[in-house]
Image (tube, rainbow, N blue to C red; front, side, top):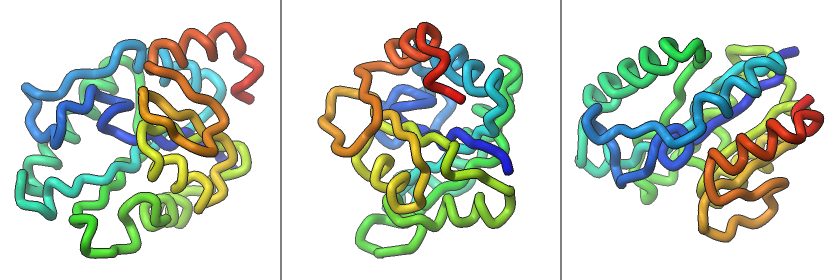
Length: 175
């Protein structure tokens, strides 16, 4: 079984400027490449799970999301970072779907297509719904990023860079 790192996109991979849908508005967070390399070196597969309600709300199109995603994956690949898959929920919150975090649909799809060891996997996010997703799917380890108070997270840091520096100094935390 493969251990995995599940990542939220906006606020983790990139700075969350609110409904980021264009390449010119996409800015990688400081330290994200080194952070991802820590997990890659430990044998983790990387997956992105992201709510993208801007599609359902009509702020941008599925095509806009797909174009940005392909660009992002290409930029990550140039940094020797491979993302196994990007799962997204395009529904507006009021649609009560089974894929919008903290519902488990996106992780369920990944687990169906990959042999994932959730007991030894991690979820990193900047919202309560990210950490709740981890608990709802039994992803055992969680990291919360940002100023918001997020309950039931194993670790909390203000920034990705702060988290990356902590994990570099305490590499035994990632097994």
